[in-house]
Image 1 (tube, rainbow, N blue to C red):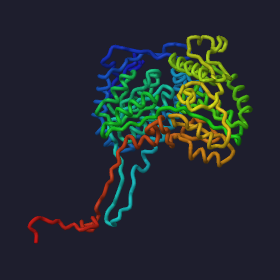
Image 2 (image 1 turned 45 degrees about the vertical axis):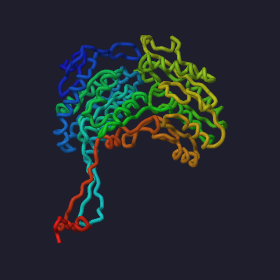
Image 3 (image 1 turned 135 degrees about the vertical axis):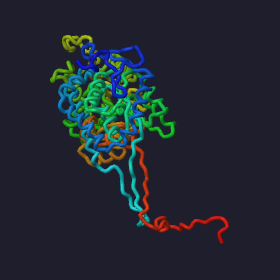
Image 4 (image 1 turned 90 degrees about the horizontal axis):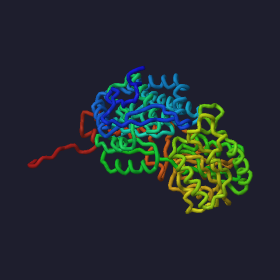
Length: 511
C-alpha cells in the first residue's frame, strides 16, 4: 500500500500528502448499505491557507509553460480514466449510490472533459482583429487569472470536478479544490491521478472537508476565481461574497425546478420515455432532473396512465446490479427533504398517483437495510402560481403532473413560473411549438423530443435566473479563468501614420 493510501486519507497540498492542522476526521459511507468506505482528515482554514499559498507560489512557473506542455499532464489523466472506467465507476456507485451504468458514465464524462481540454491546447486561444489603420496589428490574447478555487458536488463526483479543473489547468491557472464531503473517496482517487501524472508541486491542491473549508476558499483574497456547482442557497452566498471583490469572479451553477412540456402534438412513446428518464434516473438527484410534467389536456389521460404504470414498476435496488434503474438517495438528509416536499404537495392539494416514497421491506435488497431507500412519488395537481411544490427544488424522485389547456404559449408560461431556469424539454412533432419553446423558455439547457438530462462538454452547461451566474463547465470555464488582453502593435516606421492622427508633440514656449 502506497503512503497516500494509509487511512485516514490525507489532503494533497504542495505536492505532498499531509494530515493538516486539525485533528478531526470524518467517514464516507455507502448509501446503499451503510458500510464505511474510508476515513478522511477534515480540512481547516489553516489547511486551505497552506493550499492557496502553494498554488500561488506555483502559478508563475505553471503559466510560463506552453499550453502543450500543460496539456501533457492532462493526457496522462485521460488515459487513466479510460483504462479504469469500470473500476472507478464502481467506486462512484459505492460512494454516491447511483446505479452502476451511471457510475461508469460519470467517469466517461470526466474523460470526455479532459480529452476536450487537453485537445484544446492545440487550438487558437485568441483573435486577430482588423485595424482601421493598415500599419497596425490588433490581437486579443488570453492570460490565466491565477489561483482558482473549485467546490464540487456529490452527485457527479468525478465528472464535475474535471468540468471545473481540466480547462482551468490547461489555461495556466493553479487549483485549490474541495470535493463534496459525501464523496471524499472519489476526491482521493482524482488527487492520486494528478500525482501519478506528474503535475508540478502546488499546481493542483485538494483539501477534504465541509462547508467551513469551502468558505475559507471563497474568502481567501489570493484567489482570482471561484467555480461552484451545488445548491442555490450556497451558490448565491458564494456569488455575493465574491462578486463584491474587484478582480475576482464567481461562476456558479445552482440547480433548477425543471419541467417537460408534452403538447397535443407529442409522440407519447417519446414523451413517456423522456419523462421517466428525466424524473427517475439517478434517483432524481441531478440538477437537470425534471420534477414538473406539463401535459396538454388532449393527451393527458393517456400519458398519465402510461407514465404511472412505469413509475409503479421502475426497478429500485442494489446500484451495483445491472438490472437496477434507481439506487438509493445519498444520505438521510435527502430522505428528509424528499418526504418534506411529499407532505407539502399533499397539503397543497395533490392527488397522489404513485406513492413508493417508503419502500416495503421486500423491495429493499437483502443486506441493504441500512441504506437510504426511496421510490417514486408522483402526483397530479392543478396549476396555481402560489404552489411551493411547483417552484422549489426537491432533488429526488418527486414528480408533479400538471394538465394545461390552450396553446404552447400557455404551457411555456407555466414552465417559466419558477425562480429557477436551468433545464427543460418539449415533446412535440410540431416544429412551430418547438421553436416557440426554444425562444421563450427561460432556461440555459433546452431539449426537444429528448429527456432534460444529458450534457456534452463542447456546449455551455448552466442556467439563468436563480440557477446560475456563470457556466462552470467545459468550454465556458475559459471565460471565468482567463483575462483578455487587447494587444496593439505598430508596424510602421512613422508613428504618426500608425496612430492615424497628428503625432506632433507640443511643448510650452513653441512658436
